[in-house]
Image 1 (cartoon, rainbow, N blue to C red):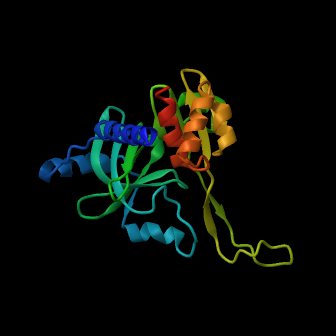
Image 2: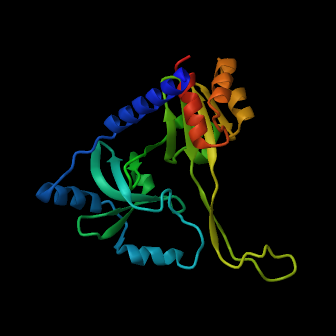
Image 3: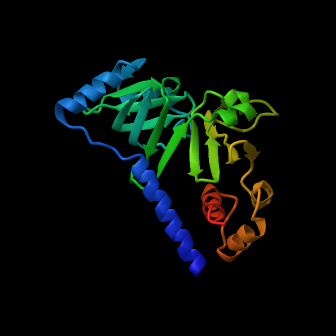
Amino acid sequence: MKKVILVLLLAATVQQVSAQANKNTFLEGAAAERNFQDLKKLTTTTGTVQTYDNRYKGIKGSPFFWNNWGKGNLQIGDKEFENITAKYNVQEDEVWYQDAKGNAFILPATQLTSFALTDTLGLRTISFKRLPRVGQLEPALANKLLAVLHEGPRSQLVLAPQKKLLKADYKGPYSAGREFDQIIDVADYFLLFGERNVQKIKLNKRSFLKALPANQAQVEDFVKVNNIDLNTESGWVKALAIFETL
């Protein structure tokens, strides 16, 4: 029971730190309009959400990290645009955002230094940043903004989100029987310890325990007692939270 309470306290602490790190200053009136005008200068395309969504009409699945609009902090160089209504198009590597009138705009993620998204309900915030150490292991990710799922003093769990478009394939005897175009998730995960240790991992118990540089027995006992599923992102985040305390 004490261990369960400890995890809940840790989770609350991590959430509080994350919320403080991504605290938004709500802009109103003329200040908000100037904020949007500055951001619009960096966009490549403008139009309505419906116009953009037509690109994916008839396609099963979603190109977005989270399908619904949330709130974002966008960092471009030394300037931060706060409390922006936004979502991340993973397939096109674009951040879509809305102004106060509901007009939608597109900003290539390559122009961002980093950004953070909070889901529609305000329950979860994820930071996206470039991590040179991951780029050293996977050169294709050197300039990509990666989702940091857990960030502690000893470890980081990182997701490289990707989307893949599967074209309809239903004709012929050897077809896949897929009658529509479909977008699917292709996720790569990385675990970082200290300054040099970075590993590409799979979300399962064996991979987790093998990756830990120390305290495997204590963490394994904690996972077993609390019935934590190490086949999930949330399971890894919980287990890494206890690893940080050992």
